[in-house]
Length: 256
Ligand code: NAD
Image 1 (cartoon, rainbow, N blue to C red):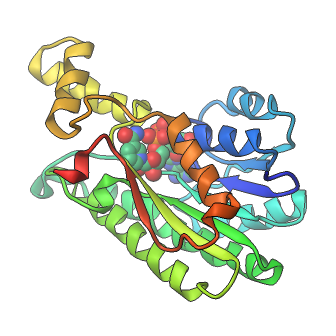
Image 2 (image 1 turned 90 degrees about the vertical axis):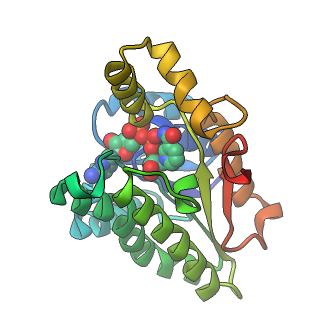
């Protein structure tokens, strides 16, 4: 379905971004990957779908590097047809104890990076008359949790940015939508499981059950594969008139 298209997925060396990159590659899209840590392993997982894969190591807290990444993607494969703004980090602390440096980093990586990448990628999509921008927000773009001030602020911002991007392009073939996962067992969440297990002196499994039980009625983690399938739907012809939604995949978290 996406043969000949190019998707750039930020933060795709791990977790949800990697799941979305693989789902888009399975549909035939060439993929530009980004993110830190091991690159070769994730790159091979995506290339296994028989598509072309490139990588750019832009730090998503640096606007100039984000712009260079969009230019690089266009040089590699012609243009970016699908932009998935996914890179993100977390820090958990009450506001009075929240380190200023963590606040600034979360706002830059989880929110401003989506603006910078969208700004740089949009003109080519508008010229082509087709484009998909998918912002990985969170249930925390719709509701709040204590001790996540920067994250909740950034994710609510991402949902707002999604709506504005959708409206500004509403009469064109460029759509913009947000995905709002509940708990997904990636390294980002494993850190929170570890912290709970250490604080309460309980096992990893008990901490996972507790984490799910607090927020997610299904008591199940959403998977990167399920989120990848939602991204594919947004890119499909059936998604042509889906504009500005913030779609939660959260085991009932926000229904409560
Ligand atoms: P993860 O830690 O597995 O992956 C994060 C990715 O972002 C990695 O590839 C990492 O290298 C990259 N990254 C981090 N900082 C970066 C930077 N400065 N520049 C470039 N890349 C950077 O986490 P994940 O759970 O897969 O998170 C992906 C997205 O999904 C995030 O935006 C997160 O907020 C969101 N999300 C996660 C969950 C969850 O439960 N895991 C729930 C809702 C939303």
